[in-house]
Length: 337
Image (tube, rainbow, N blue to C red; front, top):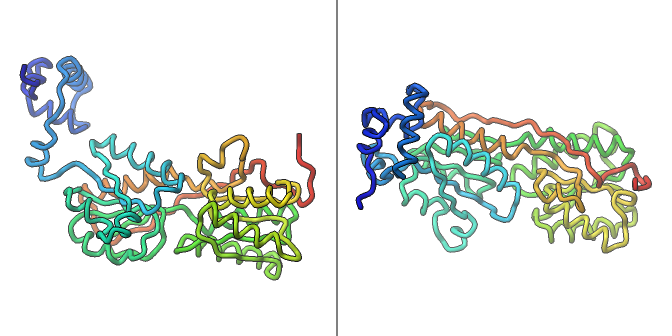
């Protein structure tokens, strides 16, 4: 038995083939009753569009390449959910590539996606050489999400406001009465923005001499090792601000191993408000970096470029918020039961 065609759908719905095409493309120029009739016919017949044929006729694959720099960070999962939801609503499909793996194997990170003929590219996370995107921009729209490195002209950047987020953390800890506050710093432009804002806020409160900054690699193991060093100082900090939630988990492990209770002996703050931070036995105070919103904004920028919006790229910063949970308290405070 032959598979149903677009003509079969049109006959079943009592409409033209061109109207069926408009419905399948998500056009808003179709009356609701006609759209319902077409979608009902699609379900009844089990019709599936011929994507390959459509790609040839439109000269588009209706796919978006997503180049992800770090598959290990759970923040990116929430961001991708926001990105994919809006792409899907507009009839586009997401193809994911691991930039880290491609680099290790000597490939151009974006190469496999370009070979598949994607219509646009979203680069997620810090890349070693953002300038390499220049040749890609000449071929298709490009959006960078969750990174703040300089990018070629015509590339939109969508990220959280890292300076504001770090300031929220520093002011929260200072407001609780902490004076010896340490920062487990990260790398790249995002890590630099968070570190500089942390230091500037402590300076404004006359605590520059109390601030301690230790570099790390933004992993759990890095957070653990850095915290062990910090807590081995003669005057150990009473609070630790980690560059992300993963490093904060390492800090919590180090405190427990050294016999310190959180938050009575040590307050710990993360960044990103990942699913890890929301686990009940962790309940980490952290900065909500609006991951889902960053994803949706990145998709919106790409869709705007598809619709002909050109010109210089813009930087779009989502507003962060501090989520106060169970890992911060005043120095020496008794834990609530």
